[in-house]
Amino acid sequence: MSDLFVELTAPNGVKYTQPIGLFINNEWVKSKSGEKITSINPTDESEIASVYAAGPEDVDIAVAAARKAFNNPSWRDISSTERGDLMYKLSQLIEEHRETLATIETWDNGKPYSVAFNDDLGEAAGTIKYYAGYADKLHGQVIETNPNKLAYTIREPVGVCGQIIPWNYPLCMAAWKLGPALCCGNTVVLKAAEQTPLSILYLANLIKEAGFPPGVVNILNGEGRKAGAAIAQHLGIDKVAFTGSTATGREIMKMASVNMKNITLETGGKSPLLVFDDADLDQAVKWAHIGIMSNMGQICTATSRVLVQEGVYDQFVSAFKEHLAKTSKVGNPFEDSTFQGPQVTKAQYDRVLSYIESGKSEGATLIAGGEPYKDVDGKGFFIAPTIFTNVKDDMKIFREEVFGPFVVIVSFKTEEEAIERANDTTYGLASALFTKDIVKAHRVARRLESGMVFINSSNDSDIRIPFGGMKMSGIGRELGEAGLSAYSNLKSVHCNLGNWL
Ligand code: ADP
Image 1: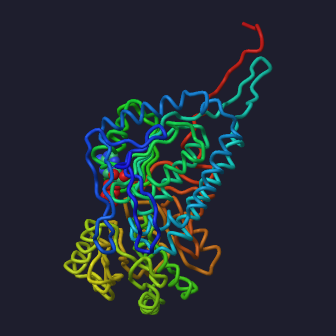
Image 2 (image 1 turned 90 degrees about the horizontal axis):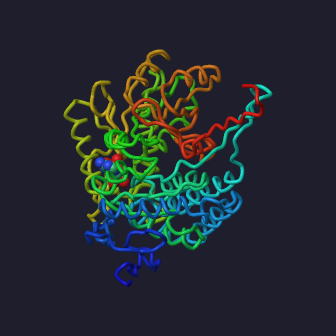
Image 3 (image 1 turned 30 degrees about the vertical axis):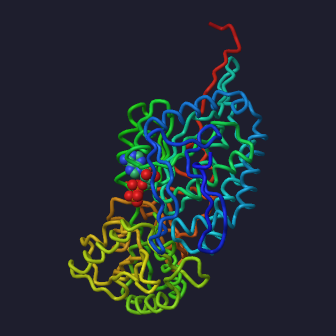
């Protein structure tokens, strides 16, 4: 028993019990192979804890538990109100454990504690609560045809859902996926990202405490290529939902074809932010900064390409640079004044640095950052927030997702040109535009090829509003009412009322 938990004290002094096993059937178990993955603190590169990593055999066991739970009357036949109550309870428990969860998130991921506490935990608890409210409001329709037929639809759960989540918002991504899945009556095998499993494992205990029957939610840590792939291609799983890179999303789509799984994919982006001559420049600068620099730039919807109309280009660039110097304070994420913590892992840190090299070698102009940030005790995966100008549309840094505190700023002449260049990408996740002209704002919003458009803001997403991409940024929608259709099937029932044949 004791080797499934460790007692930890976080850098901010919070003491807690960290589960390090696999959570299957509301129990903690070791992985069959005994393999572990060590979680690293990205702030000082120290080891936090080693966590058991699932392999295909463990996935089989978790899927069997989820299938059994799906067919178990204590879950299958529970009233929709009771299902909602379990979710409300979970949301409440997340609130009660907010400090510990935010602490783990910051420790394992590197995001500022104030952000983890206020934003991430607020959103995680809020998402579960939002979908709790939907549990007893799901219904089909009666469809009128002719007097001899009673036709109606029933909204049913999909079945056993595999959920593969990324490391940039561990708890939020877990909540985005658990909320609608549980609301609709599914059961779940969720895999945490191997870089940041700790907060989600802690959350697992709260799921049990809330009273969910065994097997309804199973949580595994494990490598993508082993546990993730086993989930994507498992014949006992009916649906797979994934958030992560486009390359992995394509792999998952292929693997999921083995039994034609229902899929939801939320993948990468290279989202444009357009600033027109008539924009409120001060607002545009502040939102553009938030849009790319928050969460260390590790946001799939980050507006990483800023296109500014030529009349205000120079003014925008100097104001953005000044604002960045004033607000993007890099530092220890447990300090209140920190805006930017470390990148999540050495691999991500190296990746961002390689794009900095690419920008330089392709001839773009570096006007801020462009190097590791060494002033946090000389350790950690910190990068100075980086701006490139003089960027050509065919350069890698204009086309590829960097996923770091890294922005390119270019200028454009006309509205038509801005739209064309904004859409000249294989991605289509988000976009943003700044103008005071209400007609132009809505005209451009319609022409931008992206799942989400922010007018006069960037990345102020909301759990009540559908989230997802077009093109190679994904398939399907999460959040909002739209998120429910990803986790339910419509069954049509035809009932013959006559003997007219
Ligand atoms: P990144 O490259 O930024 O780590 P990924 O898209 O690879 O992002 O990872 C997102 C999630 O997908 C993680 O939980 C990871 O373990 C998982 N994953 C990675 N590769 C695979 C794969 N081949 N099959 C299934 N899941 C995978």
